[in-house]
Image (cartoon, rainbow, N blue to C red; front, side, top):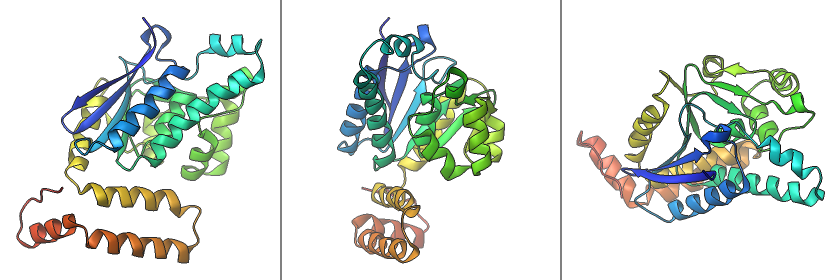
Length: 259
């Protein structure tokens, strides 16, 4: 069965499933392109309020296909570079997508699979899930934005340990460190992520888009620049119809229904 990224819908949530069970949901260029395309379609679809990324069965994603990597050693370097660029296009698409993206992780999330989870806004993980950046174990360095994402959410020494030792870190430990947002029983990660997505889907989408942009820009901005950006977003959102809906509903103790 060919490796693919499957797209389904649960209410207002798009579910993207990494489907390659024969190789523990290993990734490939066809998935990267499909991921970018799916997010592009979801961005312009007002009926989609959230996206959940998960893996088929009891594995989130084993990362890159080592057989493909080995074969690429006999090809021009540009071949592998193009593959990495494809992955990075998907990572960037997840980070800049204006709606919440939740990773639902069962079992192993290795290499680029870990990177995909880190690129998401929120992570739900089964208690028995494990995360690993195993690149150093096979004489490689990371891709998928791993070094960028990890250094923004963990101490430098712990990042060095994860990347250099290539050892597993459990979902519980990442939860304690604040990287994983929700823990659940094995087999329940997708359901837990969908419940979270439904709650977020009830929020005003314009406000969530602003929050995501503010978070993305904060690390690179000076305080004055971030304050100015916050001002501009707040003013814009105040004059959006959803602010009228939300404020009126709060004052009248009602449940808002946002556009």
